Amino acid sequence: MGQLRRAYLGPISEVAWRLPGWPTRLLAAFSLAERGSMLDMLAAADATPRREMRRKYFLHALDEGRHAGIFASRVRALSPPGNISRAQAATEDAGLLQGHGIVAGETLFARLGEMDFLAFVFVAEADAVEQFHVYLDRRLPDPDTTAALRDILKDESFHVSYSKLECDKYRREGQPIDHAIRLARWRRVKEGWMRFTRDFGERMSGVWLLVLYFLVIWPFRLVARLERGGWQRAPARPTSALAAARLEG
Ligand SMILES: [Fe+2]
Ligand SMILES: [Fe+2]
Image 1 (cartoon, rainbow, N blue to C red):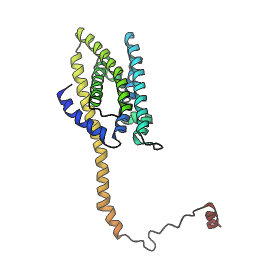
Image 2: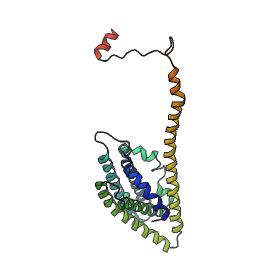
Image 3: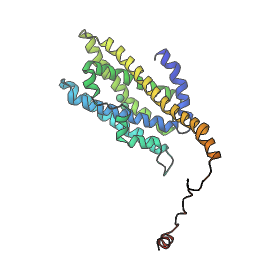
Image 4: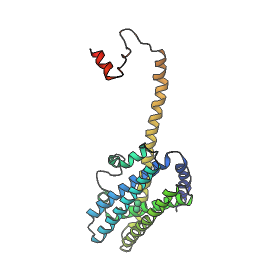
């Protein structure tokens, strides 16, 4: 585990799992990410010219689809009964993947090519394993989510080992795989920063609108009066079908 990553992942995880409503948001984000990687893997299985990789990508896609379902079911279990939370809605909204840039117009495989794609898979899977271990070591999730994470971790560890083997093969062939791995790390940092700035921007625009309301619109409400010929009080709405029929009559 990288020193820097260890320094920030622990405290952030402590906050993320303890604030009310945050665990479901976190689990919904995982579900979406898993669904996104399932689609990436299916696209890779379709596009790879290497026959031996087609089956691996397809099985990997099936694993990721199963993980997306497990995380979505934890979101449902942790959401208040009879109330669809934003987190739960996110796991059921197919358009959100496109809107949040998880699925771009072009597939990841097509954008990167096979070697960079495998380097990216190796880095992303290793990061996920590291992150899940932090949660489990600190006993942050509830017992059912902990059991689900342990189950998912078995698959994720396999994804790390098979993608690492493929990276090792490229290295033996003299291909610039180490450069591709460094690039994949940098790409993940950049994408993480872009996600953070987008979320921060959304929250800040809400804060500024609130400030604007209290500074400009709310004082105006204090001095505003209904005037003849100006704004009029709306007529009382009929409370029943019978009252409405009487008004029309
Ligand atoms: Fe996964
Ligand atoms: Fe995975």
